[in-house]
Length: 128
Image (cartoon, rainbow, N blue to C red):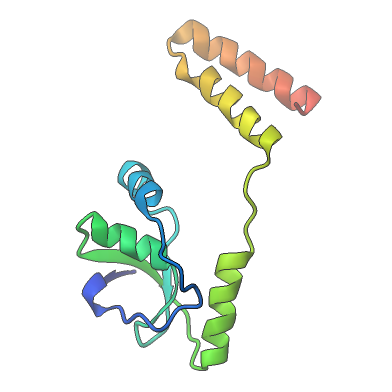
């Protein structure tokens, strides 16, 4: 569901520090909004403030939202906490694996596709 950004009410947030959105603006510009923001049935923001601000910075008039029925302030607060605390960054080994895979798939052409397919099979067999 899409909602006009100007119709979204923003309550006081838990975070008080100034947010950085430059990296998120770039990501959304390149890949689109991967996760909708979360609002309640009154269009009050529950989670996704950075995504909302990035959409504003990109000049969007509307944004994809997920509406959750959370009539109690406590419920909205729990959802905001959950959204912002239950995530895990890649560790160093996972980031290196991601970089290796990106380098692998940057090559194009039928020979490279066949080679990459073979490497993928080996990865699956040996759970690399």
